[in-house]
Length: 130
Image (cartoon, rainbow, N blue to C red; front, top):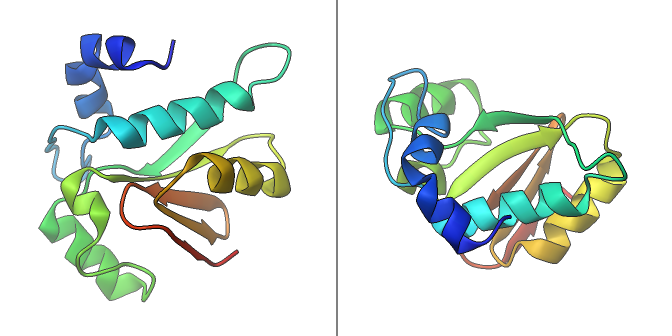
């Protein structure tokens, strides 16, 4: 169940799971970003009702975000990761084309396509790298 009820019951676990592992810090992750990610997973799970998801980044502290910005021009200074409103991920075994279509269909915020992962967020509607 990807509904709000299940998310709220597991919120502490989800906040920890999506924490900034580099700093071992967490905040309350935006419910809408969780719902979007879970809906994408549910709608791409296929007949075995199972997906393998690689989470590249959930919440980021300012310190982590600045370190990542030094390494890549693709990291925004005011990234929505800082507010727990973004997630970078990939679904193993799913075609790039299908995952891109699902992200664009489900996310009303930002969708970014990068080599090896997708970014979704709950900010304004935007599309890039696609």
